[in-house]
Image (cartoon, rainbow, N blue to C red):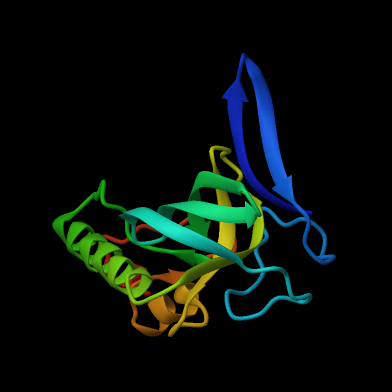
Length: 165
């Protein structure tokens, strides 16, 4: 089962889900699958991008079932992009470049999300994303040097020479 959104309604937590083919054990952001591959294919759900938040997160309206659209923040699986709330001018410049590149990629055509799992912080999900012309947006950001692989745990800073992707 692929989880798409969680929110509070009337003081209680509501989680909306959609059926998909069987997937590997539920992964969290701390144990993501590599961005270029998944052990079992999952359903791809069309998504309308509402805004790009930063180089690895965007908000979208995801069509999960006929007549059911969910608006949620999507964190791209398997990557870490520099933060806009930067610790140094270099990180801010890299963060803006990653955000702009993600915005351009998602604007290229139809966007789909798959492999959706809950994010460790709640309030957003972790997923793979692709467009008509880009099979895996995370892999593309990695290839362009705008993000680095992220397998969970503590993230390294972007403000020293050792922090390069």
